[in-house]
View 1 (cartoon, rainbow, N blue to C red):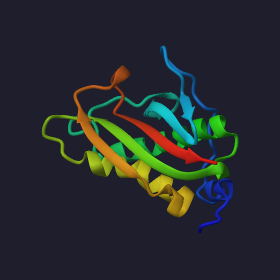
View 2: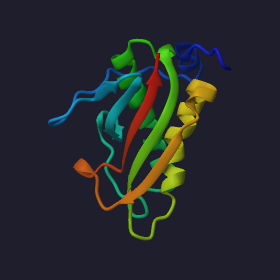
View 3: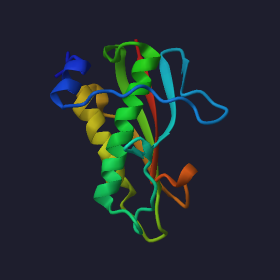
Length: 154
């Protein structure tokens, strides 16, 4: 799987990349320094709208995991828009995940697996990344999950 074509793999997984989103405030969706690309945090969306809710209250861990997976697809769309070709990605370096959750919810890492597993499925070995997953009191617009990504490119 080392020489996998990312677009072939996305097709095998039944994933069509959406149009990359635009920033909602005073920032850019991606920034590059050297061979490192930093993607701004992307919030969960469902049916084109903010996927709002709180894990441990109105959303289950499985719903959170699905939200994180959907964010991973949006992150790939932004990365594609930035580099022009996802096959130029040498490695996904790190994901950072913020999970809107109750004080007693402790499965942020499982929620974040929704994104991590998809990234690994798409990129193979190059998709195995370092990661942080945090529980937070709130995310902009009440979104249930927000994830940012750092990638190394050619």
